[in-house]
Each structure stands twice: as C-alpha cells, then as structure tokens.
Length: 336
Image 1: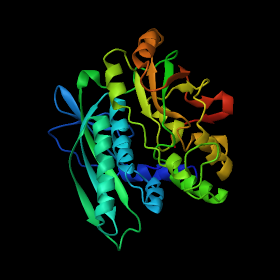
Image 2 (image 1 turned 45 degrees about the vertical axis):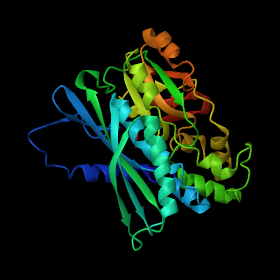
Image 3 (image 1 turned 90 degrees about the vertical axis):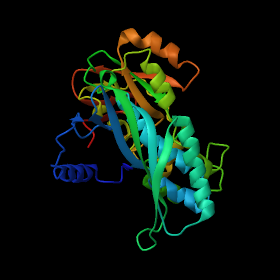
C-alpha cells in the first residue's frame, strides 16, 4: 500500500480488517505460518516454508509517465516485493509482474522490461512470467505490480517474537523516497511550482532524477548477515513510514539516533507544509530497512555491514508499546 499521510489511516485499517474477515476458507493439506499483518505470508512445506507477497509501484509511476522515463520503475517493483520477503528471513527466488495500461507501446515495454531485469539481477530473482492488460476503459495511467515467491528453512524464520527489552535497533539507509508517499510528493511539488526538468532545490540533479531514484534493494546484504548474526526482527519501511517497526512485535522502540533525513525529505516537508509527525508516518525519512539484534551481536553486525550499505544504530527496544523519536518530538502507538 502506498501509505500517504493525506489518507485516513484509521479508515484504511478498518477496510483491511473488514476484507480479512471474509477470508474464511482454508485448504486442509497445508497450513499458514503466522497470521495476517506481517510483511510476507508463509506457507508450511514441511522442513521449509514458502513466502508470498505482492506490491506495486504506486503513483510514483505517474511522474515517470509525465517525463517519458520508465526505465527505473521496474527496479521499484522488484524492490517493493523482495524487501518485504526478506523480513521473514526468506530468500526471494522468483517473481511475476502485472502491467495494466491504456495502450500497447513497444518503447514503454522496453523501458519497463529493462528496469524489471535490472531489479531482478540486483535481487537475484528470476522473472518467471506475468500478465499485461490493455484496459483503456479502466485506467488512465500505467500500473505496475509484482508478486514474489521465496524460500526459508523453518528453523531460520524471523518473526520478531524474540525481540526484548535492551535490544538494539539498526537502520539501513534508504536511497531516497523509495516508492511510497507519492500522492503527497506530487502535491508538494505542485505547490512549490516546480517543473520536473528543473534542478531540485538543494541538489545538483534534476527534480525528476531525485524523485525517481530507484528503491534500494537489501536482499544480498540481509541474506549474508543472517549467516553471521542472530537477527531478532526486521521491518521494511514503506507505506506507513516508521510505523512499520511495530509490525515486528508490540514493544516500545525508542529511536533516539535516527539517520538525518536526506534533502528530498526536508524539501517535500517544506513545499507541502507537512508536520514532522506526518513525514515520519508517510516516508522512510532516510531509514529504508530496520533490523533488531541483541547487544552481544553489535560488533559482528557492524563488521559484516562495513563497506556495503550505510548503516546506523538508531535506537533501542524497551518494555511498552509504540515508537518514539525524541529528537523530532514524534511518537506513534501502532501501525494504524
């Protein structure tokens, strides 16, 4: 889900709850591991489990359409799916895509396909198929979605249950906006009177280059670190912003040393007139992926991450519930 602050999150939660209440039928020859609400769904296959999850690029794709540059949104599509899969310790192995559009444009297909291929290479997954729907009566824009399948030994599943008082919270830095909150982004850009070809304020890049920076894919780093460190929980910071952290386990997460948000977040806040509370519940604010470990694993974790993706110890876990970011006087009680 795109997860904009302009949306009624309580209403969104009620919608999801009402939808899930209708899912009553279950096959009897296999079982689901865990419950609804995680970043990925797990199916028990005996000694191992399969992970399933799906997502789309959201309204970020409208900016790509406006400037005729669709060669990076495929990376976003892959990233949104595989970054969810790895939160359970699952290795994503295959994906399918779904493209919905008004008309068949070969150049558009080339660009989208190129991005999907680059994303698949970064994540080390195979694109095994997909679907293209030409539906001019239904859509005015391109919609790109994907679904990923992964695999994990049941003994290696990470579900957050072991998170406890005193554990350390680390963040892997984002590459920028990633792929959520773009209804708010586009509104802010419009209010500022910026043109996508303009140089983005405070940056040497053009506005469209900053906004379309592809979502960082964390698959290889996370899978490697799993073999070295006892990871207790992981969260992909997408729709809902830092609220995603409480989806690991109901505890109190004190983020007293967050990454400094990149320039793009500061400018979007300025242009859109958003509060810091709205920013943290909509965007990753520089923290693209969160990992919780115990104090004893800290040195091994930092050594293993050195020279890869920028990482920072952003806080710790306490007894209680919710998320607090003292530096910005921001706090949340739950996901919705």
